[in-house]
Image (cartoon, rainbow over all chains, first blue to last red; front, side):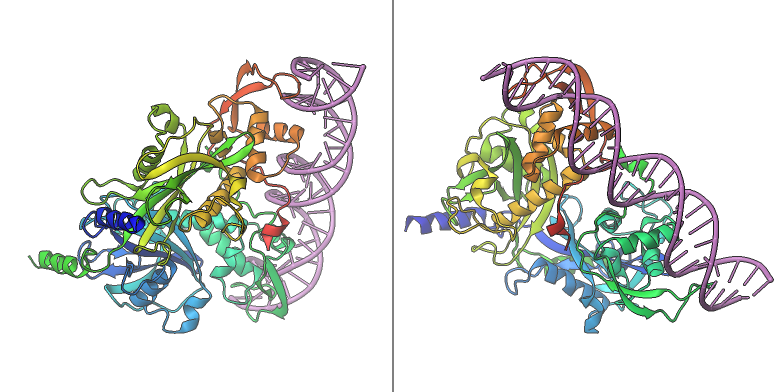
Length: 270
Length: 270
DNA sequence: AAAATAGTGTCTTTCAGACAGTATTAA
DNA sequence: TTAATACTGTCTGAAAGACACTATTTT
């Protein structure tokens, strides 16, 4: 079998075990909204390198022996390091998508590590508990990390991030900002039933801009499939009064048409 | 040094050489426009597995010994397998971005292989020449591959694609379609100087739809920074007559505002 | 002469944003 | 009673799409 020989030769020359050891990890940028501010799930590293610094939850992909695909690895790491999946419902309503892959040769001082980053949007969840290699796990407000537009951290920021996680987190936040424009993913930050002012709070937190309440309301209702009315009314009201808002559920649209564009992005254009 | 011991212990327990061998490859979806149709650069595999089938140009990332980052690996593979970079200018005007990472445990029959896919937009280039592991390299019209919306190939298609490359290619084409809406990347398919009808041909080829010539013309000129006039006029005219169109260069915009939205995407919305 | 094409003018519809106004609730 | 809030009405300007028209070129 000549073909068989070819294959054996190929394997011999390219098997990464002998040739080029590369490790693959999965890291997760899990975002949620708390108290009107974007928070990210971070763990404090219990082992070197960067021991004691904060990092995105993540870890090595299980390769040959118990082959798992990448999204499964992301969910597993999220569960292991933060104890979130214990209640099965917590992670089930969550949105998960691939963010990108980071492979700079110098990104990990130990060896060549390539990290596949995932982005998760979650509704408000109970506090996280540490597990796995994490000494601590917590939802941290984005503002406390001093991220710059360039994807690193401002000098003087106390909570330093390990590896290139500041860059990954920056990319994740920017992806979230863009996705709110043309997809209904803002609803992934909300509980199953939510009000339009709650939805607006999601947009305002992620975009960091105040939106006109009246125009936002009319716009959301005018986009087909964005939200479906439940007929019910919330029992709560705004913090300082006002009528009780109506309750909605996420609709069946996968794209918003027309989109909800961010105001004032002159800087981004050039 | 206790920290040093920690690190050594960590290395011992996680070194992928002993633990979980995962190989990392880079594959490139290189698109161009020829004769008004989208073409993709493919190579015919000279070795098993899938010997004789067509595949995206790509190969293993050089890991430890000559550490290269992922975009460099993509350019290297493109050059090696197709001989395109010989003339240095050919690949320099090209746009290259990361598309996504594909890590299904069953995607490669030999071992666990995780592939980082890149997407390239190129102006019309000379024919490609095979090299490396490729028996043949060619620009293939997208229509000849019978891609379905689900990301595989229609039965009866003669040119079968290896691995999950039909899925990767589908994702790349869909990304290209979306990017033409809100970025000026259509100009990456054009030579340094181009006419607005040429630019329209790019949109029509990628979107697979005819556009209204007059409205397209006015729209392109009204978006700030999309194109800059050169003052010159093309020496060619339309295939069956008409005045000579003016020449433009790509402008400095990174985003189109307002965007050039595709007509009629009712199907995509739900 | 006929047909195709480049480019411009104009009209209609849609939509975003500004502003105003009413009803409902907490402080 | 005051202030904040949910929601609706109305106006204006921007922009997309349809259509028409002129000028230029090939066949």
